Each structure stands twice: as C-alpha cells, then as structure tokens.
Image (tube, rainbow over all chains, first blue to last red; front, side, top):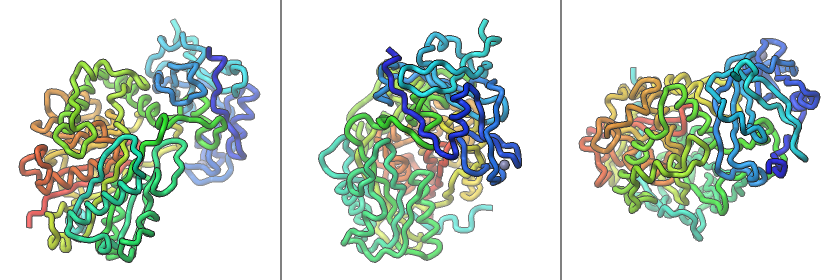
Length: 146
Length: 395
Ligand SMILES: [Zn+2]
C-alpha cells in the first residue's frame, strides 16, 4: 500500500542543499552559525540569533526527544492517500532547545503504540519507497524500547 | 500606567454579509454587502470612508488570490467607484484581522484618515480545503511536506497532543467548549449553525481529522465578509450607534526560532507577555472582563488563550471550561456568538464584531447584562496572535 504513495519532493536551493546533500550520504547535518553557534532549522540565509551570514551544515548526534505526534485521517496530501491514516511526529534535537524536526511512521506503523512524550529518539535513514525522496526519520532509541 | 490613547478610538458600526458555505455568488458581492451594511449601521455612506485596512490572505493551499474571487484586498475597495477618496490604507501580513484593528487605530490617532473600514472576507474553495497537490516543494515546506505534514490542522493537532499529554487532560473535555459555542450560535442570526443544535453524544462520536483533533474541534469554513467602521471616539459619538471604545490593542511579538510547525513549548511564554501588555494598556485585568472572545479556529486555541491571558493557570483550561463556567450565564462567558466553530471561519472578525456588539448592548438574545469590557484574542498565542480590549462608552 505505502509503496504507491508519492510524497512531496524537496527541491533544494542554495540555502537548503547542504542539508539534503548530507541526507544523501546518510548524515544528519543542521545549519549552524559559525559566529554564535546557534543551530537553526529550517535553514535561513542569515543567523536568526545574531544576524551572522557565515553558516555551515554541521553533523549532529541524531539524538532527540519526542515532542508530539498526530495520526492524520484527513486527506491532506491526495498523492499520499494510500498511507492514511498516517502518523507524523516532531522531535527536539539534543543539540539545542527548540530545535525541532519532523518525521513520520509511514511504513513503520508498528512504532505508533510505543510513543511517549519526551521519550528518547534517534535518527534513522530508511530506504525510500519507490520514487520517493530519501528522508531522515526518527525512531524510538533502543534504550527507550523495553 | 494605562495606554495614553486608551479610549480615543472607537468602532462605530458593524456590517455582516450573508454567511454561506459554498456559493455561486462571488466573494466580491459578499464584501460589498458587508461594507454597505457597516456604513449604514453608522449612518454614513461608502463615500465617507477614507481609510482601509484588512488582513487579506486566503488561508488555504492553492488559492488563486484573485480579488473578488477568493480574496478581498485593499485594492478591491481602493478601485471601487462608490468609495470616497482614500487617504490611508494598510494590509496586515500577520496577526489575523485584529492586526488591522491596530493599524486603523494607529492611523486614526495619527490623523491619517477620518473613517477607516476594517474587514475580513473568507471564501470556501471547491474541493478539499487545504490539500497539498504539488509534488515539488521549496523553502520551509521541504522539511515538513515530504512527511505528509502540510496543514494547519496537523500543526494544531501536534500542539494539542502535547497539551493533553503534558497536563493530563482528556480530549473528551473539549465538549464543554464546543457545545457552549454551539448553544451561543443558536442565538445568533449571523451564524452558519443558527438552527443546528449539537449534543454531547454527537461531539464524542465525531470522526477524527488528525488526532486528537476531531471534526467538531475544527471551525467550519464559510464564504462571508464582516466589516466595521472605526473612527475617533469624538466623531463616533455623533454617529447612529453607541461607540465601542478601544482600550488596548496589540500583537504577540515574542522572539522565536524559525519553526516548521507549531508545538506547545511556548504558549504561555509567548502569549503571556502579550496579554500582560494588553491588560496594562487597558488598565484592566482578566477578572474585569464581562466576556472573552478567544479565537477558536481550532478549539484548543481557546484553551491556550485562557491560560496565556491569565483567566486560569497553566494547564488548567481543560478543567476551567467545565461546569458551565464559560457559558452565557457563567462567570466568564466565552465566544458568546458561537465562535469560529459554530458561527463560521471568519478569522477573528466574528470575535471582534461580537465584542463591539456586547459593549454597546446590541447582542440581542446573547447580551451579557451590563457588559462593560470584552477582550478579543485573535490567532494563537503560539503564533503571531493579536488582541484588543473594547470597553463601553460611559459618556
Ligand atoms: Zn549567529
């Protein structure tokens, strides 16, 4: 079922391509200001903290905690209707408070029952379905699953 | 110290168009209907209007943004022949339409115009409201859309889940708010659900949209326009209706990181400084309010405003809203007109209109006796919300 879905596809530009290039190599890298050390995601052309323009993509640990999740029943992306209902999640990366990323459990629905607020999560890079983009995803960290 | 311009500007009149779901009439017809009703309410003509302010954006994916069709921008009225010579206008990009009340208030204080019209027009597109149809996504959407997370209803569901989990609340408790709003809409001729009662059993059986949000936690899309005329209090006293004085008006301006969605990490941190400033400007507090019109595009937003506004403590809104406390006869009537949930999605304009009607004793069968001050909080405390306090003219 889920192999028939067509996920929206990122079209990277000069600001975001560092993120997607790293993902292509199975690495999670987040934009960081070389001046003040602030991480920001989604990326911006200047640092939202200090205004610095020297930003680079820096590899992060991939450790995170679960902030929230929702299982969507409404057909918000017609090309993904085959996966409904599907669960989206938000995690907060270990590197900085308020540094959030999204994930989903499409093709990994068995994980939904284990979700608990604040549980440790870790980045994974599942094989993309058919024609779909490679995406960083998050799964409960091994130590969180008993 | 309260705001130096407290009470110097007022809303002088209100006009509603018909409120419909999908309709064959163009949105432009609704806008003109509302504008004419608003000037007539004041005893003015369209030609007297010389200031324009709106929040025009079409809140769904795939909008054409064609004036008169799915948006009504300032341009629509600037070019309309019956309007007067316009000397000032503004279009808000954040904060929903209460931001336009702020714009008009400032313009009137500065003398940039004499009679400002503020409006919000909303349109229901054919098909699914807000479906993501484009395959390729750019910018911030690169980091959310590939995961199937594209809609405000999902972003709100994420925040709501976090609220429930953090504070040990149950989604079933939202029935009190939704049913109270519906009962109020049943007393409002300008409500899409005027003649549709709602029962607790219907609420609890409503289908999930994006859990924990069910269908009845989401406002109902409508095609409609509401307009109001603002002027100085001095001028407003010479017009047909009693004026509703602006005691305070402002925006949420908290610092924050870029985000791809909204979660609940900061509904108090970002909303409370804004609410405190509003209270301080008005020289009033939450306990002085005769009613509170708190945005409910998604029902949990009203809970967050109750907490950010200081009506109850952090994590308490789910309990505070029980036992009839927020109904018309409760200690704090909330969304006395039915809210967006039951009047229809007017993006805060219904909340503003109701506050004005309440403090001018014009709310008919929903009138709160001796309503002296009513607060409007628009949008969400987690977003760039905005708000205003309206007070009765004692003169
Ligand atoms: Zn910086």
